View 1 (cartoon, one colour):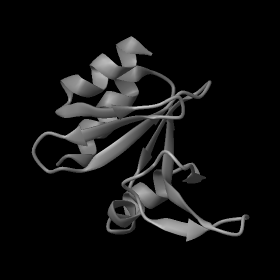
View 2 (view 1 turned 120 degrees about the vertical axis):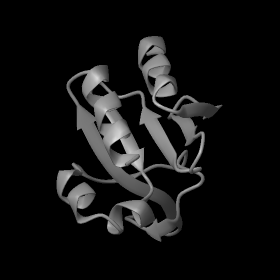
View 3 (view 1 turned 60 degrees about the horizontal axis):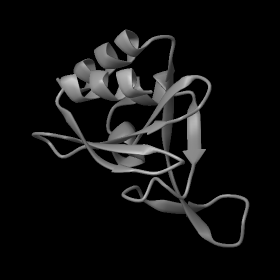
View 4 (view 1 turned 180 degrees about the horizontal axis):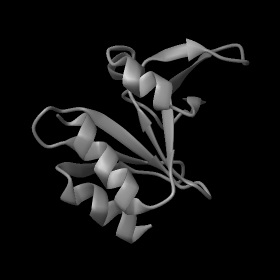
Length: 107
């Protein structure tokens, strides 16, 4: 996991929060937030507002992820009684693939 964190930090993000459910990163210049999830697969979650602005991102997403640790993202009702934070998940085969994706969406 440390190597993945280092890879994200090399593509203009700084770690701003860490919990057992996710690691939060903020882009150093544009302020966009992404979350790294400690899943079996390499998974990051992007803000749904940002994804809706870019149809390419929505098509590439593996779906919506609901998680209380996505604390800077908006909330919506999922299956429970109360609203929960959510975002669009993206899965990768390698940390290099993930870094290339983050660089691409920075353009």
